[in-house]
Amino acid sequence: MIISMTGFSEETFTNQDLTITCKIKTVNHKYSDFEIILPVTDYEIESEILNSAKQSISRGKVIISLEIEKGSTIKSFSLDLNLLKKVSQVLKEARNFLGEDFNAIKISELFNFTGIIKSEYIKDHDFKEKLLKLFNTTLNKLIENRKAEGKALEKDLKERIRLIKDGLKIIKANKNNHTKKMLQTFSSKLKEFDQNISELTHQVIDFELALISEKADINEEIVRSEYHISNFLREINLKEASSGRKLEFITQELLREINTIGSKSSDIEIRNGVIIVKEEIEKIRQQVRNIE
Image (cartoon, rainbow, N blue to C red; front, side):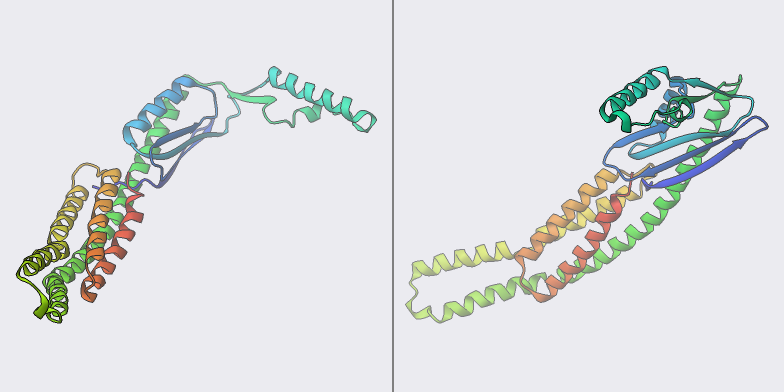
């Protein structure tokens, strides 16, 4: 089963006191990275959200935000005195530097600086339960969305694998012709010097012919390529979530074998097959980067 790393979900809870909106966005990332944005500073809630998210999402950049849009009976205000002190100090330094050109700032204008006035929400007895329930609902929806996108990815990957198999068929159909052509070319050149070749030289030539045949043989690379393809399909057909990292590794190994085939062969049909396979491998590499 394939699960996409990208996804988005949004859910809202509303009653007569407040409206809470939860948004979760996930994007590609090599590792797992969680960012939680809460309307209130509550490390207990943040910890529960983080633990729950980590159990459901193993890889990707995850941004979780919870917003309280209204709540007439629960909002209060307070001053961040430390920040106010720092801002006042900066303004004093500006006044000393500018002198008469500096216009005094009114107290009301100080409140335009972000963070000096903090809005806090007085939680009712079941505020935490409401918030966590909304988060879990949003998380479950996100997971379903990622699975749905994963199904689309799986369908596309299987089509790419089918085309790769077609390319390998072309390579396999011409592998013997490739070796024969190389030996024939070498043998035809030797005929020009046949009369001057000694018995010892003939032994050396036979050895060289065997060496050319071995170096030109691409059967081993074809067998390994077929193994990597089977391994790839086995991974994406697992009932549990497939590993994006493992699929990336398998794809890299498959590309290595195809590159070796291309470097060994000068046969036009085999090279055409290599081009087909490499084009599809590149498309697969782009896709597997989006798999959790």
